Length: 127
Image (cartoon, rainbow, N blue to C red):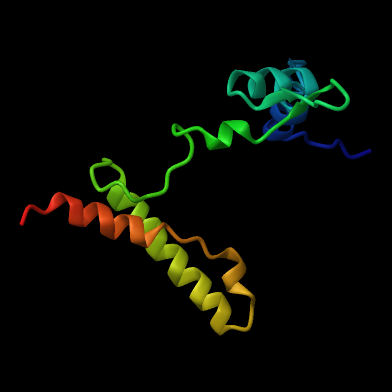
């Protein structure tokens, strides 16, 4: 009978025992994606709340509203401003290419708030 080889990746990811070395690995996927650890991580970033109707804990989008998370790409004094502009340019290019090929590229289009960028730029000029 032909012996099956187990890849190192599979052992590290899904756990099991290596037939050659007898090393036993835990299931990393099960450990990382279990309810208790996910709720703990989400709670740390403020994403776990309580449903007002049922009183049960639930995942919310509140942490997304944080100024530490939500970046509009309009602050020219932000050290990452040029990176945001490059992301915008690449998004414009990619969605245009999709649209030109008959796909609904506009559904993937994201736009930094140009009016706010212009207003902030103008506020830096003294005239």
